[in-house]
Image (cartoon, rainbow, N blue to C red; front, side, top):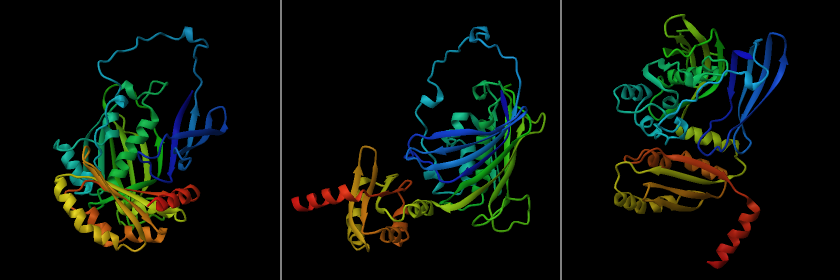
Amino acid sequence: MVATSDLTFSFLRPVDLDSGQLVTRARPIDVGDSLGLAEGIIEDGRGRLIAHATSRCFVLRMNIPARAEDLPQLPQPRYGTPDPYQRPAPPPLAAAWGKRPFVAVVAAKRRGELSLAPCSQLLGCSDPTAQEGMAALSLRATPWLTSPAGTVYGGVLTLLADIVSTGAVATTLPSRAICSPLDLKVQFVRPVWPDGRALRATATVAHRGRRFRDRPRRDRRCGRQDGGAGHVVDGGRRGAVVGVAGRCRPSTQRSLAQTELEERRDEMNVLIVTFPLEGMPEAVYSRACQELAPRFAAVPGLISKVWLADPATKTYGGVYSFRDHPALEAYLASELFASLAGLPGLGEVTVHAYGVLEGPTAVTWRASNAAA
């Protein structure tokens, strides 16, 4: 059996609900009598690399029966509700983030006005705390979180450390700004037993700024970088069980969409924008669209815009076709797009850019124009 000593993640791109099934592959680099080193990658449903990781493990020799029949038989518990991952997911908090800074979001969670993020609810996290430069969160060590070795799984502790490290950086950002983790290094100090007592994860911003160039340091004379450093405490009984350091890239919601576009610059000319109506009557929205249509018709490089509407779910938006990628990028940087994203009564604006299969598109495009 193995026990993880440290774990290092490098994140290459974000994962969203359109990423498809995630696949993880790992291989051993070197395994000795007492230590092992491995590396792994995570890919999305399109085969794009999401993250790279390395792990160093202790090799443990244990007396485990060779036959399954010789293992102790444990009764399987029965529950009256589905497993958590089978229950309906709670709504995301992006709309709340777009209207207030992160510290205010956490304060609303403590007052019960907002729920915790879906992943935090899945783990059973509680008692979030945030102030500028610091974030903290609690997690009860239960048997649900254990590995085959019977201790709380190191990946759970890593996720807890990542949540508070990213949250610490988020406390320094204004509203309508988010941050993406670039890398995360976790060092495991001692095992955590599932005794039901609370773990407390705390992270502080060690160095902050607009972009990253160096690893974060515990330097209160803050320069111009953003990095989180923190630890997880085992119920206050034996001190830290996990030490963590990580870096995040601050960015606006719009610049994240532009980052994805830059990766696919040569092929992009279709954009799909969707958003929910939150407080704006549909009749008012329809009149506003009619008034705005001439302005969209005058957007340079825009071939067409199809206005989307799903009254059943109150989801609206548009499908844009642009002559080329620079025209699409110019629209995302325009005042017209910024005014749309900032309209009162609209929820979170979701932006997806897509490539075009030129061969079959040319055939169907000619056929539709001929029929017209």
